[in-house]
Length: 67
Image 1 (tube, helix red, strand yellow):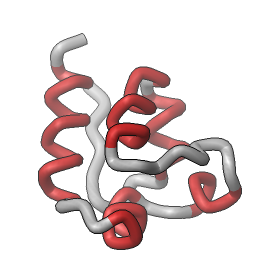
Image 2 (cartoon, rainbow, N blue to C red):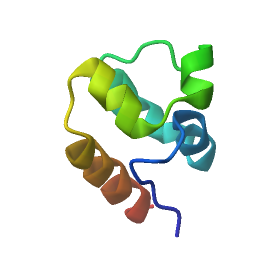
Image 3 (tube, one colour):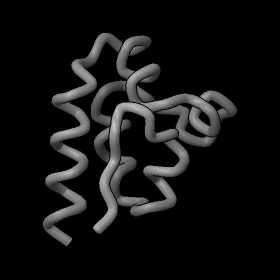
């Protein structure tokens, strides 16, 4: 089963399941196709957007486990 971590690159999470986009959009990350998303980890994105990385990762992993 696929899981994400703080080190997971955003684009890799989107490739695992495109449905994860809703979680990134929900924290205000609206340029999922921009170069930052291709090389930025979930932890880095959370720092930029002022979001708790552990909380976001838990939500994404719960979503992935439910599939």
